[in-house]
Length: 419
Image 1 (cartoon, rainbow, N blue to C red):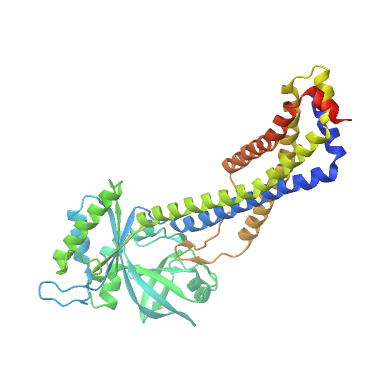
Image 2: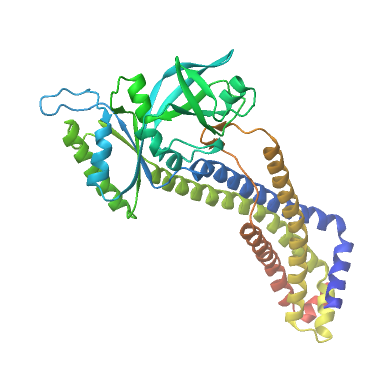
């Protein structure tokens, strides 16, 4: 083995510039592959981070407008959902695991001492925190007791904390919102540098105070259990729409009357898209790497031609064709692997550096967590192993034709070639 490596090193030293230029094409190919894979991974991580805490088995329901006449009603009629719809869903659909709801309220002026800011309010049920992945930096979220007792409590966000309290701890303190006093019980995580605030109060409190106890809700969120196939989901949505159609008097097939936003479908569609992106990245990366493989194959063909007489002498001294094949293939794999690993290391370093810069940069955030489309663009162990396999296979492919040609040389022809 030592003699074999020594021979390969001698061959490489004899053609240093040619070997470097050919190896550079391999390094560039694997560098592009790693960067493309890391970028695709960062895009996928960023988009999926927005699903990370949001329940992926959830469905959002919104009242819409009818698109066709029904039972004497004209089309274009506004359909509104009510508190009673929550009871219907909970009672008549065993597939529903949890139910929550939101009511969007008007913007109000919030004050504390001499400080003030404009705030958008929403009334929510406790399960909203779990279903929407709301994260708190301090305190707690709305609970069942707050809803049942119509408590005037509020969960503020980081912008309000910055503006009204200058970063101080606001838990337990009271603020005025639209002339009414609320006690702060929690702080949602978010970007403190935003100037607009969005805060949460109990749904029942918001309906009583700001809508004269009107039981309308704007958004219903449900999570499901026992639904594993597209057919089951389609059947559930049809039954759901029929039941709400009977309650609100619109056509059972009128999908414009109630908007159904299926997070599970969005998640599945997103995974299909990323599957296509990953396939495209591998095709482009391997295509770039193929150019380097062709270069290695060409240089090995030139090497075989230059060493024809040497191979003839080897055969005359009793060398087997397999030893010549092993020599060519080993040299090809070593050139490909050595330069390929250089490209891989540079690619990984570039992705790690980009990831470091992203972590140091202030991210745009919302009340539900980070809102980004590019996150952690590094490659995992599986991709590194795959790239290693690609390099070895590439080296074998690049050296196969030259090795086969060298093995097929006849001793007399090889010796005559020297003359």
